[in-house]
Amino acid sequence: MNSRLISLDFFRGFTIAAMIVVNDPGSWKYVFAPLRHAEWHGVTPTDLVFPFFLFIVGVSIALSLSKIEKTDFSTYLKISKRTVILFGIGIFLAVFPSFDFSTVRIAGVLQRIALVYFFCSIIYLNTKTSQQIWIGVFCLLIYWFFMTKVPFDSSVAGILEPGNNFAAWIDRFITPGRLYQKTWDPEGLFSTIPAIATGISGMFCGHLILNKSKSLKDKIILIYLVGSIVLCLGMVWDFSFPINKHIWTSSYVLFTSGLAMIFLASCMWIIDHKKIKSYTKFGIVFGSNAIFAYVLHSILGRLFHLPIINGEGIQQAWMNFGISTGIDPQIFSLIWALFYTFFIYIIILEMYKRKIFVKI
Image (spheres, rainbow, N blue to C red):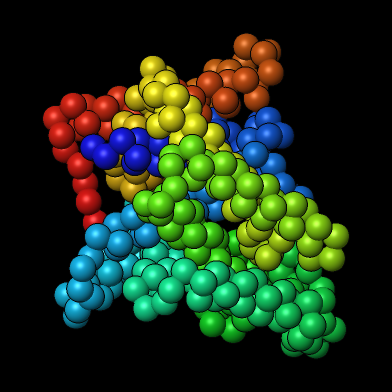
């Protein structure tokens, strides 16, 4: 494996592991505050996980597509195939295990990853780095304009309330009755526009990593610098366009992309520059089969809810036991999430040892 990619694999695996932890508490009623999404405006550590992964998708696009000497029809066919497969798996998870397609949710985590991957790949293959930056800026500004300046339905412009904002209105129009929160969707189609900018920020870091004229140390310093600037811009924009994961505001893109750059630079400094790799295996293993790990955790999570123990699922039975002890149920909820993540890790580790890597 190219040593330059070890830090990225670790970052990818760390992000997937974090995603499993925050997605699978023992009970959503008993979750420590940092492991919850922000109620609306604002950000928690949990709100960093998904944009971090989209950022990594962007970095990976730059590193992989840069190897293509000649772009032809087969290149676009491969990109389209991956997009359709990812989107299709997302739809499958939305209906599993009931397979009721009558009100199936169209949007979703994998669906957003698929769309960001598709558009960022097309952008990468057909534009220069400077043009990509401007496209990212355009995505942020056009989204800000529509969300804050354009009236919708019977409402005035600039309302940013749950289910009562321009993005929610568009999503209700495009996919009525198929939204996660009935009147709005955190992975809705319209808010995918700024999510593409998240992917582009990763592509920009990919360009920096590929720059052969700079030393590894200089690349790390530059990514730290750019990340800090982008982070500060997001914090400033927060005053007029609040940081909000649920509607993926432009300030949220800058804030999380800046943090992602700083985290990646830190991984590169520790793993690639200082060669400290003693505690990286956990992340590297998860990163080797990241999408498979996500899909597996989604499927098993649903199966663990099936009533097989006295009419209860395994997960519910565990929480009932925890509540009966009189100990803070949040602790038992966290223990379940950690155990579940470790359980997924054991499976992925065995695949890693056998060199089984599921590629899409």
